[in-house]
Amino acid sequence: MKLECTGVKAVIGAPGAELEEHKAMLRGLSAGLTINVGPVAVSLDGRDNGFDWWVANPGNGPLALWSVAVVARLVDAREPIRMFRHGYQSWSPAGTAVLGVDTDPSRAANLPFVQGVYHADGRQTPDGELRSEWCTVLADDTRGEFVLGFIAGTEHDGTFRLRQDPEGKPELVLEAYLGGAVLSAGEERRLHGVSWVTGEPGTASEHLAAWAAAVGRAGKARVQAPFQVGWCSWYHFFDKVNEGDLRRNLSAASTGDWPFDVFQLDDGYQAAIGDWRDTNDKFPSSLDVLAAEILSEGRQPGLWLAPFLAAPDSEVVRANPGWVARFVGRDPGNGDAVDTPLRSWWNPSWGGGDEGFMYSLDTTHPDVLEHLECLARDIVEAGFTYLKLDFTFAAAVEGRWHDPSRTPAQRVRAGFEAIRRGAGEKAFLLGCGVPLANVVGLVDANRIGPDVAPLWAPDEADAIIAGYLDVEPATRSALAATVARSFMHRQLWLNDPDCIMLRTSETDLSPNAARTWGHCIGVSGGLALVSDDLALLGHDARDQLDEIIALGRESDAAAHRGRPPTCPDLMDHPIPTTLRNDYLELHVDPATATSTLDSR
Ligand code: 9PG
Image (tube, rainbow, N blue to C red; front, top):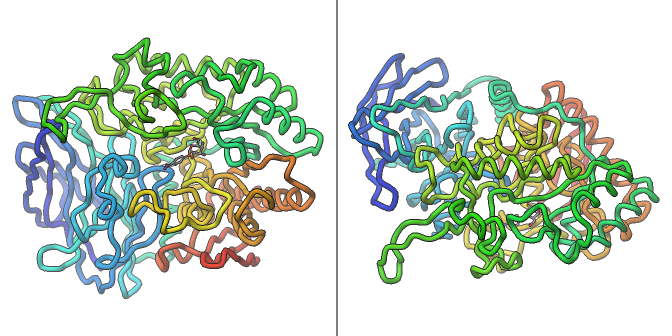
């Protein structure tokens, strides 16, 4: 299998207007090529196994640029062709699909609002196209493999699109996604280069680990934090958590001598989405009092916040209506021009006064960045030095932003940079619902899968959004992501696979399924977080946790030495079944939720 670059594409168009696609031919890559593609100029510098590139607006006026892409034919590929589809953000699925058989989830959903949450490009894909974001692997029937990745994701996102050309031949589009960012007259921007590996010994997952290591080195990834053991309030108490629940678990942790470094309060304490300094009626104490109590029990205080979201009726929005990103367009019903706050998420249990819709704070606005910096400083000064920063895709959502020159990736990153400035170098930042490529070098850890739940598999009949079953809370989905993305651990950040499920009551997980998930977390070397009411846990649960921590410390130490766990069958099934580190191999049967753990 070979890649033959045959074309360059650019998509431009003013926000709200029809997008225009422009194409130019390319006869292979060489050093120092410049090609006019409609109104933009693309410069390419081919190198061994990759290319560097730049895009310029040579015109006299501003230009909104959606994407720039190199189009390549897959030569000598024997079908069927499989693609490892790496998802855009924490909760987006990761797994292997077959060209001509599987479909992109946006085909079934056809809901741009939802698609924009789980992909860099919220538009529906053309029929028959598969996509992967930031990195990918292509494999054909001869076991030939191509591992490809953008070498960063800080300035723009990257999408690989696999499809058949009009003659039915397989074609790969390597796309830099700029999301309508406006280039001023004469402006040139460097794009993130693409690198690939083919024909070298090793599994796809091992090559991805090498790619991740290179991206991490170039991006000064924060990979030095110690192994984390903690407690999180979410997966038992959910948003009903109250101060008594927190206090009882804190004292049970001391009485039972539970080995938690971190004690993290999740969603449910805040006065409103956006008003993070104030607690609600369920928490009579203020944040500094809560943090002091956690600290006095010898644990690091952790706090959940969704820093880029704000409820319509929150104090922050009422006092600063100009801080909210806008939706500017036409009402689909009557065609009238509309200019309203940008609705970027929906959760009726958060209230908010607009049917459960939440707005995005505008991270291209200097006042918003100052607000985020001060907020993080205040929360850390209140004593919370571990921050779970959730729903952070909100800064990437398509809309009208104060500074239109910024790409979605730059908007996300600017928000994280402000929080890091405020929180200081020593704070532990955990990204969640986060466009993974955008935050290397800023976060210490990232959630790398969808939410776990006290059940194994989601019920297809109950799918909330057609096509997106795999993003719904379920242990099997969290496990699939943990196995598929294991190669990232301590190369780009610390992986957070999501919480261990230890309880045997108030759960639909079988003891086997819970043990399988615990072993997966241990072998992955990622964060080991308990999220049960400790009152429900006995000696068995404690023994299980101790085993998971022992497995985790050993695996994490190897990842620290540059040997993260990998998945040898990444390209073989839709849900990978095997997770391997230097010492152990875990085999999971996703159908029965059983597993075996063998030494190597
Ligand atoms: C708090 C929770 C927990 C959890 C986070 C996040 O795609 N979704 O509909 C979706 C909803 C909620 C969600 C994830 C995905 O949960 O992952 O750990 O902090 O927020 O509200």
